Image (tube, rainbow, N blue to C red; front, side, top):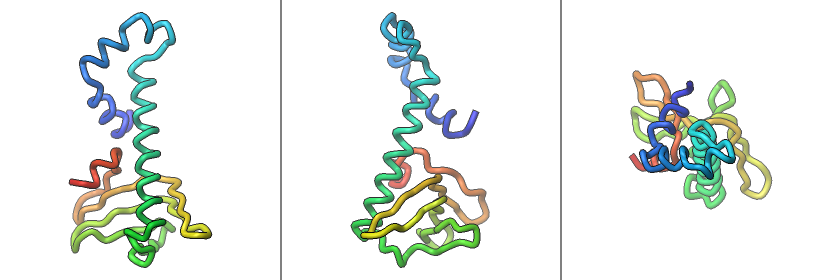
Length: 122
């Protein structure tokens, strides 16, 4: 189980677990894994849309991104931390696509994925 998958499982409330055991959910074969997968995909898409909007509207200027040797791009947050965008591609007319994950890297620690857009506020 991936870290993101485990984090999503922890976000399922007891009320949602009870609902998943109800007739309507079981009738349609909807279980915790389905909900977790849907939450993970929606969070990833929201993070992609947020990244695209921040770059398109130049809230984050493209010039602030550094191209890394592996083809990914980074955005320095402080002298000891940065965001890493996997497979971030610039297109015509200020359009961007994010094909991979967004990671936060604090110096001296391994990079960890951002799973929810709200984590960027921390």
